[in-house]
Amino acid sequence: MKCLKKYIKKSLYLQNIDMVRVSWARENVIAGRQRYRCNNKPNSNLKGLGTFECPMWKINENNKGSFDASGFKIDYIDEDNLDKSNSNLQALCNYCSSIKRKKVFK
Image 1 (tube, rainbow, N blue to C red):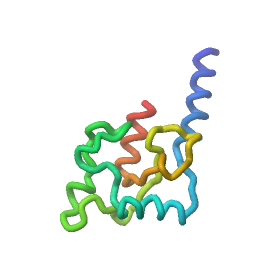
Image 2: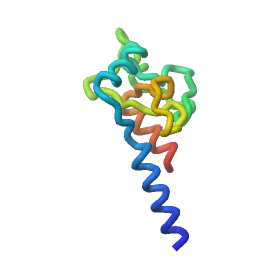
Image 3: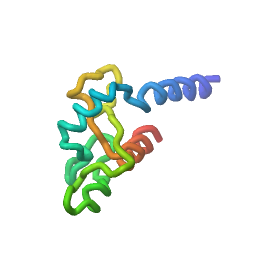
Image 4: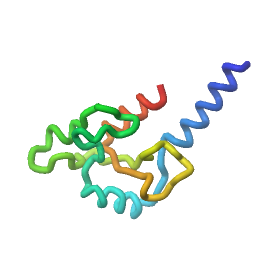
């Protein structure tokens, strides 16, 4: 029973933090602040990503770090899902976003 409660608590936590829900306009403010580039720049050592290197910063020669056609996800910087201020939000490419979620919630 204790394991089930822990699983349900973790599951509810993941549902709340998995998707940052902000308006389209606010998404664009956050991504625009980063010049529509993934915030996981080389040597940035972001929380939850560590030394993982973003493929967008490797493959886009002319526009390093720019989001590709698949877009981006808005993500918490410090995983405090109660702080929804723009200063705690960042835009990550879909690839980095999925890697971060796997690392943070394994």
